[in-house]
Length: 148
View 1 (spheres, rainbow, N blue to C red):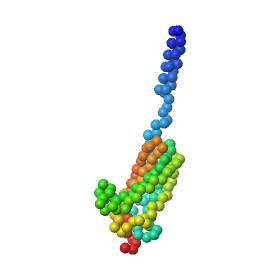
View 2 (tube, rainbow, N blue to C red):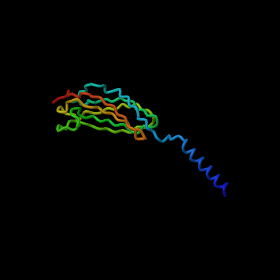
View 3 (cartoon, helix red, strand yellow):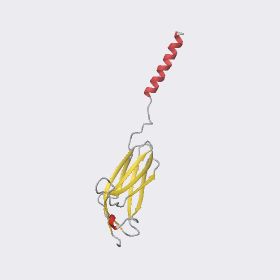
């Protein structure tokens, strides 16, 4: 009986030692990396024509696996980010996969109005499969160039 107890204890201790020494690769805590190439800080984009767009060029990378990116453009004045003027804003969410992606994305200013002329925050977020998120932003100007 004593030998059974010793064997059981040895097996139990071996299992505990193995569990304590094993690597836990499931805990990805590394945030994705965003390299935002355009728009540039302070860039002025002209709205009011059929071809008015904001061009985004970015590289997203992660040590494990990318999930999605989000672009949010909103008025930079005040930081309730929603003032009484209801200036133009937009949010776009797109899926990503793999560990690195170059993305070119054009945002139409077709619904932009002359009254919306202002400085805007161009915010880019990236989420990986583990739920880690990174963010970069630029302040850009959107000015009216079209017909009134």
